[in-house]
Amino acid sequence: NASQGGSAEAPPTAGVGGSAGMQQDEAPDPLDAHMEMMRGASGQELERMLPEHRQLVANTIAQYNREMRDMNMSADADWNAALDAVRQDLVRLPELTPEELKSFIPEHEVRINELREMHREMMSGMKM
Image (cartoon, rainbow, N blue to C red; front, side, top):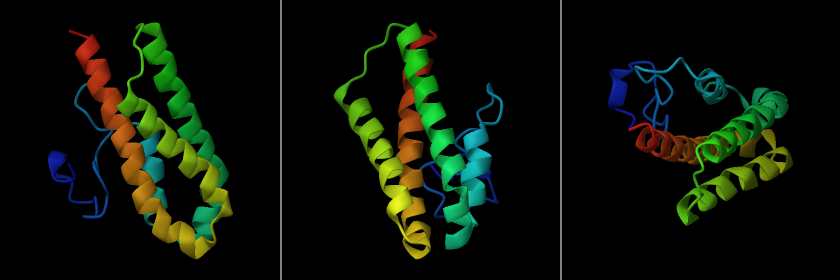
């Protein structure tokens, strides 16, 4: 949760993991830095960042699917629901006004973090 990791920089609205990608055993996740930039961006800046954001999230999803396939893991209903929610966000984002984007990004980030946490838990369960 947001209090994990003791990050003083993460705002209280950072979502499920203000320092989600900074585990001790992994390199920093490019998505963390990107989401941090988005948290501080104006609606117009968010609009300009959308193509990069959508590509980064799509690449992350593709990586997760590849890792799961490589480990012969099957997706469960919770995973599929979380994945669908993030994908629906990616489709919806370009349709939003800058003001709507600004208010939508925090809930979008929560869904991304939920997906990331599910992936982390699945992968850690397979490395035993």
